[in-house]
Every structure is written in C-alpha cells, then in structure tokens.
Length: 365
Image 1 (cartoon, helix red, strand yellow):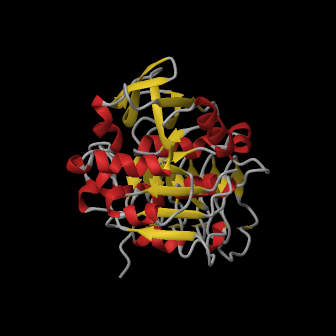
Image 2 (tube, helix red, strand yellow; image 1 turned 45 degrees about the vertical axis):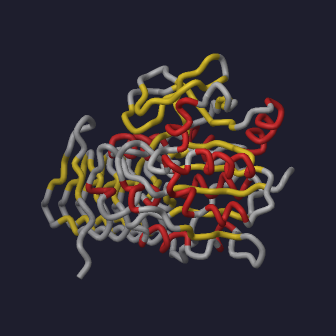
C-alpha cells in the first residue's frame, strides 16, 4: 500500500452542547467505561498501517492531551512519523457544522508539505465505528476520484451530521443536518496529498469555510465519490446519541461488530485492579470497568473505572463515569453521572428514557 498520512480534527463543537461537553471536546468523551470517542478515529488509522497522524486540537484540549499523550498506546511514539499535536484556530469552536475548517488545514500546511505520502486520510473524532481503511483506499484508487468520502444512510434526524446531495455515487453538494434515509457523511475522506495542497491554494481567500462548503461551486470539476460503509455507526454529537450508542454495546451482537478480534480498538492503558463484586451484590447486563467495587445492584448500565456502588444502592439503565460513589440506598436510573460525583445516601437521580438526567462533572478542589 502507498504511504498514507492521517489527520484527525477535533477543533469543533456541536449545535446542541450538554454539560458533558462543556469542559471537554466530544473527542475525549468517555465511551463504554474504558475508551474515549477519539480512540475509534485513531485506531482506524493505525489499523490501516498509518504511522504518521496529526491531530488538530481545540482550545479545551487538556483532557484530550491527557488521554493520547505521546501516542504510545497506539504505537505512535516513534522516531520516524508518529503522533503530531497540531494547533487549531479559534474560529474552529463555532457551531456551524465545520469539521474540516480550511483555516485549521492552512495553519498546518507545513505538516502536509513535509510528508512524502501519496494520500491523506482525514477524519473527525465524533463518530463511533470500526472500519477497514484498506478497502476505502482501494475504492478511491479504482474510481479515479479526486476525493472519496465515507457515507451511510442516516438512521435518524441529526442536526450535526453533514448530509450529501448525490447522483449515483457522485457528490454534488452538502447541507448541515440529515433526515432519516438521507446520505450522511461520516466525516472521513481520502484525498491525494498534492491535490489537498492545491485545494488550500484555491480557497485561501475563504479559509473561514469548511473545505466541503468552499467547494460548493466546484463539485462539477472536482470528482467527489462516495464509499458506503455498512457497519455499525453512531454519531456522538448530543447526549441522547451518546447514551444510545453506549447502551447499544450491551447487545453482544453489536459489541462484537464494533470490537472484532482482528481489528482492535486501542486506548490508553490503565493499570487497574479487577472489579470486585461483594457478597450480596447483583449485576446484570452491564459493563463494569476495572477497580470498581460493587456491593449493591447494577443493571443495564455502564460503569467507568473506580466506581463504588454501596450496599442497597441501585444503578439502572445509566452511565456512571470514573471515580463516582453511589452511597447506601441511593438510586440512579436513566441517567448519566459524570466523573468524581458522590451521590448521597438515599438520594434519587432519576430521568426517563426520553429525558435523561445529566449530572455534571464534580468540581475538583
């Protein structure tokens, strides 16, 4: 395979932010207790043999840097190539749906110029899916396209997902937001490195736009083709989609599709002790991470590391993030409890499946 360069963009926000994404980018949201959303974009690239990856950072990058570090856990801490932390522009935090802001790419043109890669794979960090990029590259080369974008039929309405206007497999335009059944852009595409640099020169006067917005008048001369991905996909732009995707993983069929043995999703290693289930505890259909201590009842839920569920406490249909304590007799149901919270004894944090209860991250003194 030709040498590939990877670029992951994380410098954007969502149209409908929640308290979960006020202090962290979507890319660093915890997923399934042990992962972060960015792990999927990074792992897809590494699994395709990409050994040089640049990540364009948002202003609130602390949690993202803390997670990815030097890239060691993705085998990207290397003398040649490796993981590059790239600056994002202040404009990138706008909520216009731009994930491939020209200004972000222009800021980092030197990263593109110094590479000798033939192709660049660009991805956002807000979709959960496990994809074989080898097939994407093969399809791109076979079609003779200038750009090949990864697509899927939208499973529902989402204001943050980019929709595409297509004729067969040829893209003729984009729009912000999709309805069920429309062609949705999975924020991943492959393009020749030299052609990407050429596009940056074409649109240098409109660098406040997204690349695909700037191309609005040029879809007839730029051959943009679709590549349909038929695997599991979840856009993580709002709290409801985030919750649903995590809960999907309690279905073994879906979980085994997203985490196949031959194409692993890598994440930051934590040296945790195993979870401990005390006498009298009850746990069913749940994912319990390392170093948890369970004395109460947990059902249909996902627990991050170091969560304590005390005697008589109940956690049902909920996500409880790292280092939370659910005190004796407390009840958490249809809720997302962000990290470091202590739910007092006898307290109820209760939402409904249609209106989740969200408890923001506890402040750390």
